[in-house]
Length: 215
Figure (spheres, rainbow, N blue to C red):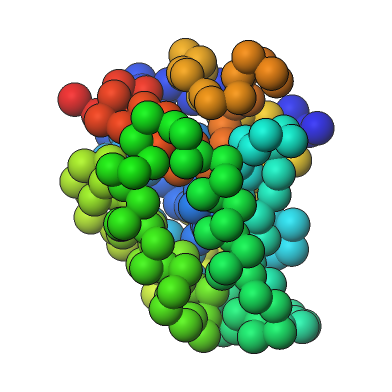
């Protein structure tokens, strides 16, 4: 696993403008940055990148950490906004089955499951739309009050902005130093850091706000 940039703290994010990518059920790092930056800009004109959080997330199951990947149609060099979700895999049912199996015994699964299940029942054509809508729902559930700005062109120059588009990545270490929280299978595997935001939500519920720096 690659080393990430230095640990990110609340102090470092204060009064900062940050640039992030779209992401599928993004990791805890992502929402920590999103919540605590003064301005959040989501890049919508970058080229799609494989094996990133743009179409995958990590959850902790009875068999350990597993990846859930949204299948996309074969791509060349395409903008992230134009990436279509593949119709050739029953991914929605498979993802929800995996999520339910992993978290149905967690303290808050029953409380929040009805908010997230509809995302696995509605048909989605574009990855961008799916990610954006589920991000808005997660912000609502975490009670993150933040206006999101979308780029109107690719930002290769990011003066006065901190670029997290490729710092928050499955192959890089966690960016932040949040304290471990209770996880369903922690006794079996130990604490697993920087899993999908739903791991934090289902295990900690309203107390998630403490780890995300929400006052």
